[in-house]
Length: 307
Image 1 (cartoon, one colour):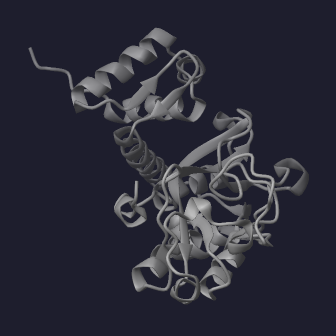
Image 2 (cartoon, helix red, strand yellow; image 1 turned 180 degrees about the vertical axis):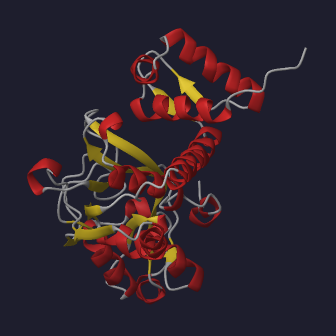
């Protein structure tokens, strides 16, 4: 008797629904299976691959590193299958305008490098970008997709994980020449550092519950990056925004201890139900999930080093 091959695309679709909804029960409703059937399907998938894709607890489901990789690949494959079916059926590609709310840092260091390919792939889609680090009301502002750092505040958002970026403390060589290399960046006084001019989930600096704000505060991460490059003061920034400057020697990673390699998650989010996403939004979210990631580079642990 011939062994039946698994429906790999179907498995990927179910897995993607579990990740997107963070729940076997919710995913089961959307794919028309029972929660136990969905759970068994994911278990069979993990057994066949020989890796754990999801960490399960009574409260939440989280992707393992292997799960993150498989999820991103799966979304890309599912998007290609969907595109192939539409093209074969002679249907039009998604069209319309997408209003994006994003930090200037993400636009400068990620979106700039990948947007051209997306626009060439979907010639009937237009893009409008609003740059701000402040968290906006998506419905009130008419935003279609928002790129957000930090944990998601509500489950009412359809989200695509864009990975996690290390928060790294850096300073320009000119600042180090003037002040010397600190033994521990955690201990820098307020006058010797920069922070954000608004409250962030990741905090302004390394310590929690600190009453004294940074001497220099700026409303967006890209502004802080430029001031750090000018030698104004050290700053704590997302690694993906300063990766190139560290490689060139324009910024130096300062030693830290307790908060070394703290990671900040990034998501692309949309208000609405996943099963009713407009085609233009769905393909953009899928594209960001594979091409717009901000994953940290692990070798920075040794650069930040001390601990």
